[in-house]
Length: 611
Ligand code: G6P
Image (cartoon, rainbow, N blue to C red; front, side, top):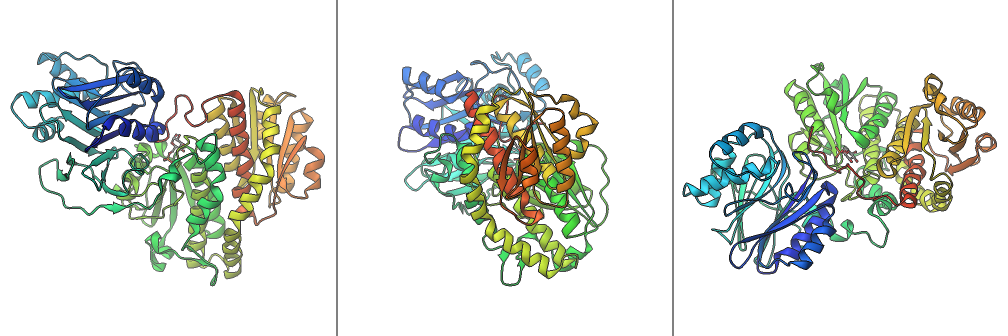
């Protein structure tokens, strides 16, 4: 959570910093602030709430200067307020921070005893005071930061300025992400994530835990916290800045929903082997012998990624015939879960940073498991600790509610299951070839479903926008999609929604049903169709408003549904890719009609680096 950004170069820093923060706002938006080296000293502007409030403050009192740092906050220590907003200043030092300092109580006590006046409730201000004390002892900024961090326990990515050294920024990282952008023209940058820097440079250096860097206009020097010089070649990132823009859509979420066909094409590139009906699996990091030796797969994930992992369990059990368990990462942690010889752990995460997933995967690794990750953000923390990473290649996802990353995660789960199934002789060559062919055709089908159902779904959203409770039911592969449909609606429209296994409806949620409750029933023509149809009829008999998501030409579903959204007929394994689309659109339009903040819903953040 929280986003940090820094600029050192030959041009005014404030507009670049604000632009970077706009691209990082998905990480938190409780407050924002900048610190810039002015003509005489460091000047700070901070504002509670969205970035536009900071922009107003800056238009009233502009900041001049070519070196600066910025921050957008998701509150952890201390409520959202101006005094708790970053940057935090102590003497000549200003600090922005993403992470959590765990020993903050002890540090606060010690600093108060040393006579420091602490203005905020934050853990970050303590870092500013620690650095200031070291500067007062005569250290230069780099050494002062190094010494201060020696006293800090926890997660941090920090950027630090000192008015005594106005030409540089010192940055450091442990657990929280930090990317250094190398500019061409006497300028350098840092940020929490790649999209903030894309308009300025594609040459990026990813700092590792326990490293720091000194950024000046014409140099970047990376060292370990112990002072050892680190030589690392930058990576060139092939995301274009346009990928992180709205491209004419009203919201990032809508753009990302419509981007799914393109995102899937990128996910499939170089992986679908249509000639032999197989998957190219070299990135999976397992030999054919390794594949045969796996005894169990354990899937770890949170939120939407957990729903994608749930589809993975179906794929792995039915196509690769491998026992598969799935865990909410926060519940796996610290539970003494048993990891056995031959277990393969798969961590699924869009950001590659979710702390619960990261720590759960580390715990599994410490118990001897091999870790494969399915991640979108390149070189993020989870891929770095994994034995191999099967990237989703969805491109930057900015909307807090995940859409295209979900579809691409499901695609990777399915490709992995096909690959494993073939190697374990659990999946016939014909079935594999049919699925590979089906996957190759999916992007076009998804594009057709999106354009074909958009208006119908928008009309449904308009009609049921006032519903206070909404149910989503599905069986088999449609169960995770029901969960995902409910999560999308909750996240962005604040409507109470429940996703349920359709067969479980009679054990509870049926009591919620009356003639004001829309019930979405996912019943594509699959092996569960008849039973799902019965559940739909049970809901209808209790006067629910029933919306069927069914296969084209399903007259039985049409006869009993109040509204019907049709998707093309595909193999059972491919149905989630199509049925999820109307549910994403429904959540989007309900939120848009309600006027909620679609891309930045209240209380949420896209990247959750707290427990
Ligand atoms: C947050 C986001 C969700 C996401 C979840 C897991 O809650 O708002 O969209 O599904 O974190 O994130 P990850 O990056 O691990 O997929």
